[in-house]
Image (cartoon, each protein chain N blue to C red):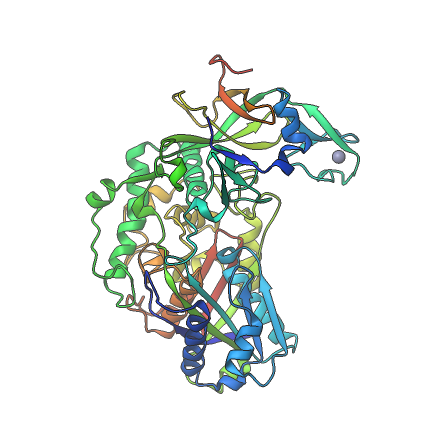
Length: 137
Length: 390
Ligand SMILES: [Zn+2]
């Protein structure tokens, strides 16, 4: 269970609203189809303003990971160690993610992952990525 | 470029300066002018980081400068340390100013600490809340606990390890080769915060892990203080004392995902595409093999192996061999961070990184590289510089 959340004005935006409804959606271009993250008013591939949202497949590979052992805030004291990840989605975008509290995996750069959305309350959920076959998707 | 750095000024490096950032800035600026043999009233341009808490107005008013005909600001702090020199140089070459001071003042230990989550989060009941639109600690990364630059660097480090298949021992020897070598330099540098603290490879290996795979000794020092440097045209520099060092090339190079924190760029085991090195060395008319000494912005030790590879000083994947065998040390093929670096001298947000390059070419470093004619400076390619003996 994380103790850090975006402020309400960001939770009301489509990216977090879709997650709170249970699925990871990516900001996508309606003209060329490219996905991008973080969300943006314009497609960085074809510069179209005609963008929307599409559900992500949830398939990704592990770009990198790091285990925070030192708490950089007093409220994170009970949370360390925790694992932060960088994941490359098959749609061609990168997300910052992590391993959910209480889970431990033998991680390797390049390994396949799948998404598991975890809800904390009605307004806030996060997209975690677990090794394939470990309870994601 | 046709400019030179002619003066350096700084306060002491400390953990608690006991004075305001404005006072620190003024002390450093006056010191730099004195070093250059110029009058304070000669200043007609200022360059600063947007992140600096002092303003052009505060400096002009405090010093009672007759007039300022140019002032400029650069983003992302140390990311743009060499970019700030490029900006000052461009202003001089464009005729906008004659004598530009680049300064940075920060109480980064006794004041707001970059290594703390409090910088980017607000406490609201049982929650910590992010309102940051961009990393570090932004609304997309903070909820996973990615909050401070040092954690980002652990991600680059693991990516590098994974890409080259380094085991923990070889990786440890590589970064230990940075931290231990630079501490040795700092032990011979009277300015260095850690001049009296030795560090052996065994000490390094036993260091507390902060964010795996990085240890306490891989991290830069949180520091209070200020530094300033004076930049003028090469023509004017020749009329001054013999302390001038020429800016052969200085520039910026960012691309999608590379700033502020390099989370979204394609590669994470490399932090600068080939274009960054080509642009820099092309402008300088030199190649990596022409460089005598390198100053690599080391927010963490991981910046050193990556920059050495990204700028072609060594081949891809060769950093572990180079650094664990002392290639960066005294007498090595490319001495790196001979002041001790941000790891062991202190952290003036890249200005002390540049200053050591200047000192090497003046011939007055405490770890002088004999006959050094050229110095390279970079922050992971986002801004870079080549300095030459005047
Ligand atoms: Zn498009």
